[in-house]
Image (cartoon, rainbow over all chains, first blue to last red; front, side, top):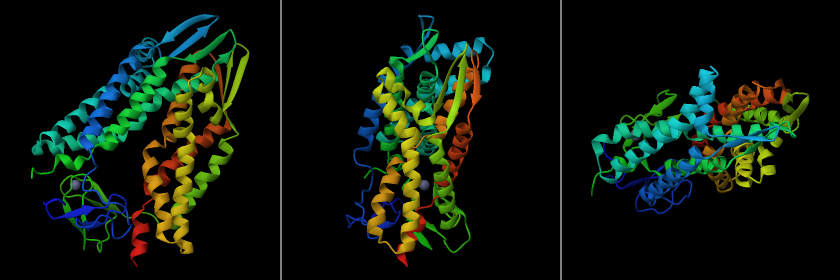
Length: 198
Length: 196
Ligand SMILES: [Zn+2]
């Protein structure tokens, strides 16, 4: 199969019309044509790095602090998983573990791998990398689950001195990690993995 | 026959648009290249229903929590905006945007791009709307927020008595309709209609 680059064609990313690479704007929808996402690999690498940095405080610092009769009980993401395991709610524990711990780590590995495939032109690995990348892209926004849970708990549990919940610094760190990760997958042009060296 | 290129692997492929395929995948990487879906009118109906569900969501109670005689009731916007009291402005703003504002705007934009051509409005007018829709597609997270409420309920039910409000059922329906409308919304038809 020959690629758009080899045949001198550019795909319009808005309306999916194939244009000649002599054109600068799509002849159907008049959008600016780009063969590949500009600076795709650099942008992906930077967002990926940012996500990795934010993930450290996100997991180590408390995501919310529960006050009961004036006593503060900070809880971390890992702590929440352990709590549900001990109380026997295995399904909830597994959801938390997969969504907040396993998925972010796996996502970073997959995108880093795809980036390697594109950078070093490992074309025979491209198919495998693309399949994994698709999964990562599809589950991207589900990592916001923890942030939403904290937001909801904070607004629900406001019972004066008896019990109240305050968001911890990890909520913001986690949010930033998720956003950085979504931007990383959005910036990555998977076609770069299949392109031949010219 | 229609020649196109795969947006995921860059391969140039020909699509036999005369055949009655509902989905056309890239022969190399399997990416979805083209799919025929329900008629525009059906999508418009779905989008309108989603929109109708959205309005009461802003006012109806989602959940009532009773803890040792203390009780709080919340609506969806209040819950999303909740973190603003903790000075967690960024989290509060992002939550309200992704959980409520973007899903709402996406439905409005779907409606605009489908209804406008019926009144003979030029493509130059619709294109900017579609571009905005495209760029905010990933940021509409109604379904994620719905699951977040359910997870919170499990957590809260350990210590307090919960009373589910009508708002939660409506929100579940809204999230479902929102998901279906976005899945079956096919912008290719917009471009096709310009070619005639
Ligand atoms: Zn392909």
